[in-house]
Image (cartoon, rainbow, N blue to C red):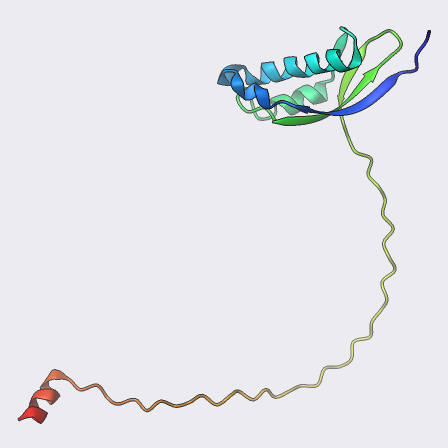
Length: 134
């Protein structure tokens, strides 16, 4: 019974990595990815590509990512290859832009609203107040 290579894309939650000590988190993340692949693809022969390893170790041993998106491929011999998932870039057709002719804008003289002038009384100093009282 020969199977064609089985290929699946998974998002692996690595949140439980934070339960392990700081200086062992990236190692634990790699082991969790390996365990996930064995559980879901039903095979013990697991190979992790270098790109996935670099992705996990990018921020050091203490801060691996919380989630990782991978592509698991199982070949006829039962070997599982874990590779980084790269989305296919969809080429979107740009809608044709209609050329709009710009009309010369007329210069408008904007009238500023007249501000109410408040008559300011000059402040009286202490010496002025004393002279008025006398």
